[in-house]
Amino acid sequence: MDTIIAYITEDLEENNKIYTNAAKILKEGGLVAFPTETVYGLGADALTEQAALKIYTAKGRPSDNPLIVHIADENALYELAESVDDNMLNLSKEFWPGPLTMVVKKKPCVPDSITGGLDTVAIRMPKHPVAKKLIAESGIYIAAPSANLSGKPSPTRGKHVIDDLVGRVDMIIVDDTVDIGLESTIIDISGEVPMILRPGYVTKKELENVLGEVQIDPAVMGSLAEGIIPKAPGMKYRHYAPKAGLIIVEAGTMDQSSVIGYINDETKRVQNEGKRVGVMAAKDNMNLYCADVVLPFGSSDNESLAAKDLYVALRQFDEEGVDIIYAESVTTKDVGLAVMNRLIKAAGHTIIKVDDVN
Ligand code: TXA
Ligand code: MG
Image 1 (cartoon, rainbow, N blue to C red):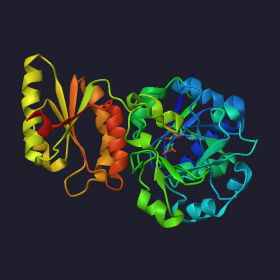
Image 2 (image 1 turned 180 degrees about the vertical axis):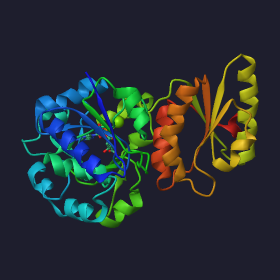
Image 3 (image 1 turned 90 degrees about the vertical axis):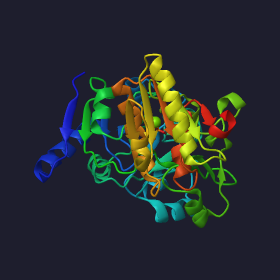
């Protein structure tokens, strides 16, 4: 399949042509990748089963993994949700448009094949102007998972989408103003107590201010190996993973210099075996490492930057062809919980505490 690659620029007239063309493709049942404020999404008409199903083929995505439906205004809740309650309206008022996805009981018009057979649907109103414009211009609800091949890190740059999906989708809209860099927070409000299924930029504390008690799915930091099955089907797959093995190194009770010492000792040992080593480190620590490739991962005074850096670094290590990656860990406070949730998955739960090895 030929893929149209369209770049959003300052030229408003040209941009309008892109939206018109993209909307036409979507209405005819095609696939369009587009930027959102979290990560790039791969969109199709959510309520036309045959269109939405193409997403699974293009991504190589397992069919039991449901899609998020993207909307442009609150009225869509009344068309997609079985009933609209105060929690939905309050969350919408506080966080939409923005990086929050609500899981609610669905109406029959939402095809079972896009919800993996569940009786709930995930809904998000994105904030990114390109996403908003595309939903409004096409007049449909857009089902969109992250625009990566299944198993790869979510794309935060047009280049990532092109690497993964060219030849597999009808159009890719490029606008590299994706500023959060991690997927949305998913909150399930279909049950008794609201539960965070996937942490993101909207934190537990912020959700509690609106909803009262909020639980976190134990699978967020636990592992399948421990028998903990996540409630968001997509969270059980090996995800976000770079090609090289990834090891997280934590200080434990030691100080940060022990992490740097440990990683540098391991780096030399592994380099002696003829392998290339990558390190992800807080910006202010980067020059202290002797690895072949050292990439930024937040900074000591602004750990939320780590969210923006994570997927960019994982993809860059793939390109650099490193054999092993060591990552500093970040705090699990606030948005740090989302960062560590993705990092731990990318590392397949391989975490070394320096005080255990000394
Ligand atoms: O920021 C985002 O959420 C991005 C952008 C494009 O909006 N989208 C995204 O979609 O990350 P995706 O498909 O990569 O992740 C959706 C997650 C999956 O883990 C899926 O299992 C879960 O949401 N999910 C979708 N519908 C669900 C439902 N009804 N119940 C529980 N989990 C659901
Ligand atoms: Mg995804």
